Image 1 (cartoon, helix red, strand yellow):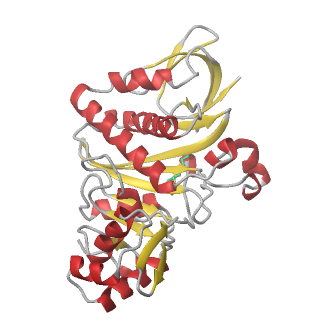
Image 2 (spheres, helix red, strand yellow):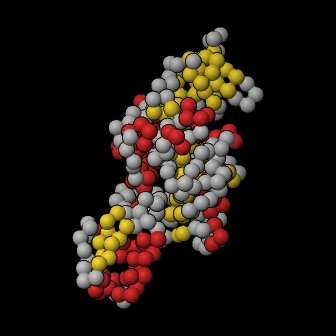
Length: 339
Ligand code: BTN
């Protein structure tokens, strides 16, 4: 597939010389490797090795070079590069297919939808360092400063009717929570349908967008915005009240690529479970990760507002609310506030 170069997309499918060089430098764990050895291993000239080292430096790899010693990788790049996302990635498909990387884009969801409508396969991942028009649910904007957080969208092509699509949103929330549990000491909780909260503040949001053909899903784009290294002072006063980041909660900087890789791993795990066994096993985990059941809430919908107690979230991801007159309502989407 050919992507429009003006989008600054970088498509990486196979290991080229630069990737192999990086992999050799990583394997030597900071020890020196001579230019001669690298040139023999990779069957390219020493000048070519030096050119590829320069390219790696340009994208943030800290590589030292000393005459008669060779090259040593001191630090990997902080950027959300495909090489870093793929390093140690334990998936079969997600992140193993195409990773389309933008230094800056309007919205990874918008781009992923464009690629999907041109036939990009399931598992294609679109990532960006910065979004200029990051989108949230209900037409809101998503705070997307450069190189601090994860802005990523996955293309899915599940063979399900559109009515089942909401469960994909809940599945995404479970995968996000699992990734944070695996890599940090944080205790994420899910707020229906798919906000991830730490101590009541939002650390991640998910935007699911569906394209339908007749009565089948053509593709689904699941976009995740995960606040990782944003500092408190970087949020506006308004966002500060509501949002947090892994850094704010743990006082530690985390590798965005590692967290995204972990998310992809959990995503694929739950997606496979969903395809094989349906939503029930995923919804059981979702329920363990939420505090919403039994809580009194208000639900703001476009034209209505409900007040009542949450009885359940069913196996289709629908919130069941009992209002004060005892009447049950099935809520498919909306903003909830716990009272
Ligand atoms: C929410 O409102 O909670 C959903 C926020 C989703 C933000 C992510 S960032 C990556 C992807 N691209 C977007 O424009 N939005 C999603």
